[in-house]
Image 1 (cartoon, helix red, strand yellow):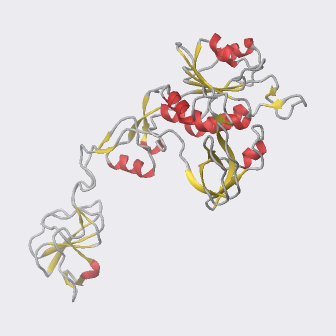
Image 2: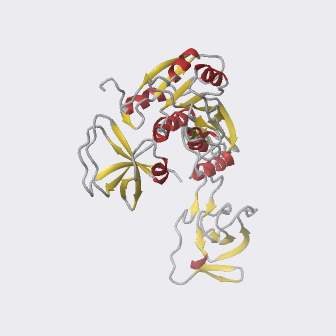
Image 3: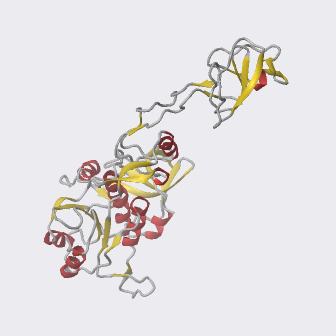
Length: 398
């Protein structure tokens, strides 16, 4: 057991292999959740001129003032103010030349074109209710750094700083291969000795928010020739396989990968479920360069996609923080002590509490479908009592 890699060691070794995809430009309006590949520098100054922060009057001198025009957002006052003059001004409008402060409309007394201070109000100090030119950013400023995730605010900032497109690394092309002689493609035409091939669909669905459509290569029988044929059809940057990664008589994935030209980087991780995880690399002119071999049990596949495949894809897309993060919940039930492997219990969380799903068997899809978190139990953790703090990974799982 001492030879097994820890979760952190395995994740670090895998992420170091992440393929670096090409940098592409995307319309900023369609760049949600992309990570910038380069720093973004402002091409314009925001605001480009001094602007009013309030509705009121841009004033010059001590007052009273004579209104000589209006400055509206998008239509500046064409002229300059002399002492004793003012313009009507709206929020976001350019301050006219000769004025450096705004008398807000609530503090103004207006009689025709004559404007004065309302009784009891104080004269506004310089720059009062004025947004100075460039206070947000100036042309040449770095407004977003490489690796930044493009969320709604970042999209707005990129546009405001003068960019219609942003650079990011394209999503890797991923092939998915589920293997096993018991698997059949049609769920409606499945004999008692067969199982519908669900792992490939599950893996593709987990990857879809990041990469879109994947290449489906399965299901493939436990046969070296069949596996070789499927591997030769693999395209893109990353191959994710499910099944055949262990050492049983019919676990042929390692042999098939080696015959395909792959080199095993590491195999087996000290986690439960997911111990027989395999990572391989391949130097070839065509086809995936990084291979992630997942266990065939569906829960094991799900957990290892969450802990390894998704971080690998995020890293290849330039995400500087590709690993999932935990939060703290309180145990809603006692949890037993943990053995030498780190355990990830399928759990149900709500209201700050978490409990185990009905079954922890690595083949139990019904329990997995009910889970909305993984309860992280480090190796050799002591028993947990009701109310004790525990670490959970939140899942988007239905």
